[in-house]
Image (cartoon, rainbow, N blue to C red; front, side, top):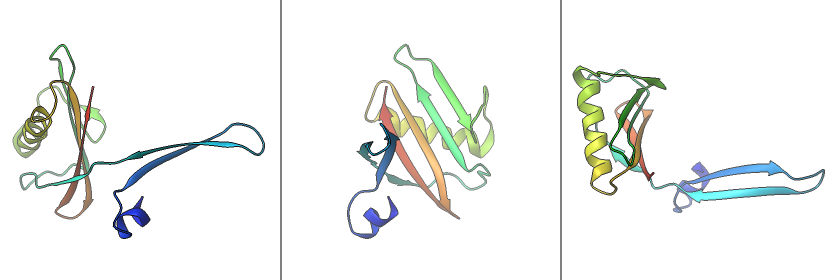
Length: 110
């Protein structure tokens, strides 16, 4: 994926599965990454805001579900939800810290 980005192509997610001794199946999808600037003070490495088709909201911080986020994390999750709702009624918005002060955002429909 990083070689694709360096070549000016969108980053890709590639998964391979062995079919038999000599054959492999590949699945490739283009990742639609955006940069995100969450509020200062977010100590997490990953944030997820998900809204199901029935409206149920789920928040994850570093893979752990958080029922009532607070402080900068709550603000960051609100930002993720806002960005997701700009595109879809039901979605998963995920932000990953890729470097100090740099986060990448992906938003996928449900």
